[in-house]
Image (tube, rainbow, N blue to C red; front, side, top):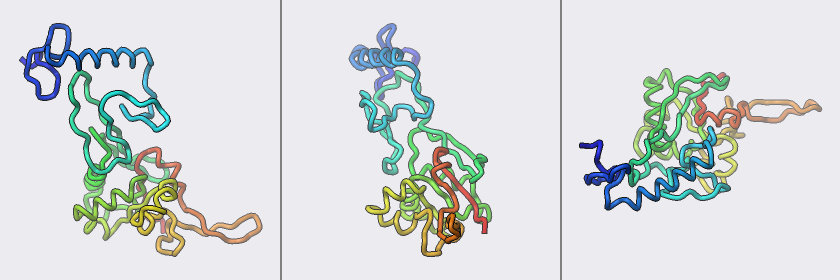
Length: 228
């Protein structure tokens, strides 16, 4: 019966009593049990951190590396064992500029660009319902995937994918696609809804971003409609 089967991936042996692995895979089980005890002693993980993901300044975790937020479009390989219940990688939301959540879903294993496009397609099923702009921190990757899989032929008629200002500053010097097509505040007049005229204290006019994309990027995905 499955209830007594070893929980190592692709193993059909019977587990040793009071463990979750067979005799062959006891070393994996002992390593897991030891690390699990250390995690329990360390306390509860921070709420805003994705399960298993490490930031560069944090100590390196043991075991296989999880899918990182900005990794290329691919789901990670299956875990070597099922000693611990699986967790969803993240909750993806679509929000209006005012902060109202339009839709949300759970991504099981990664925030891949294919998952993002499928989510957007399920929410905006008709051209009339699609927003003029979709702003997301990995918008240039989403655009590249859309071009590759052909879905851009549909999206380009109504929508433009852009990145938030922080990612644009970091991408623009090395990523031509991001620099040319995903600028959140182009100064050439190509996107008048993203750039507005403002005046300094002396009454001199200057151009500024119409939206503070950094405020909304914490919600993972920001979608807003044209206001002009």
